[in-house]
Image (cartoon, rainbow, N blue to C red):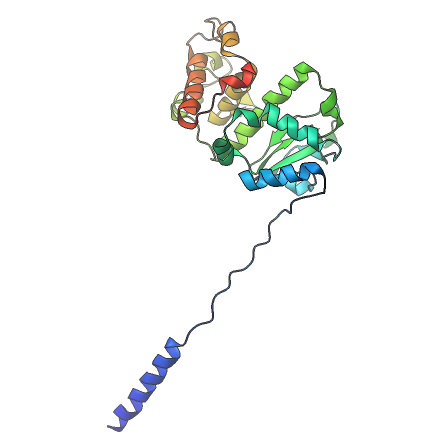
Length: 278
């Protein structure tokens, strides 16, 4: 009886302690990596609105890490800060040459975490900073960068603007498909055995780049070649050039081109052929 008399009060005490209300768990506050607006110009309101709509930062003030970091390696480019006197025309150019070709829903899926607005991007080779040829656009897993957010944009000729448009679409698409934001067309993925692709079999397989920097072609470098063509040539122009039997002996270029055009139009409502027409 004495044992039972001691045990019951002990159990009751433990139950009371166990049922005591625990303190509410307060989650840690996560500080955003970037802060908008970056300035007080009229265009900063547009940049803030863009972020609220798409969840994508536009940065004209950025660090080397913001631009260069690419998970396991660094870009072989350097970028200057955006020129605050030319950010407004840079935003107009991005809309005119890139954004207007895609729906708001598609942009929400495909846009990167950030867009770098640089006044000048140039490639670095053998540790030398090359200034001769400004680069229109480059991309990583988390961004694509526009290298004309400066005075050079206002002096570009029509043919240079066409090249810039192609470069923007290419880098936009490569960051989107390479990191799984937008899927590649399944038929395109299955269309080519890249183990069979060499410089002498590229045409037969419908591949533009059998090697890139000494590395064999894969589905992503293959897709990159098609985006370059789609953004630069209308289908009418291609019928008179690339799709002729002499250039496309097995009809693979035309077949894979149509796979891409059809897939994105059917699944996402994107008219890729419109890029070269306008």
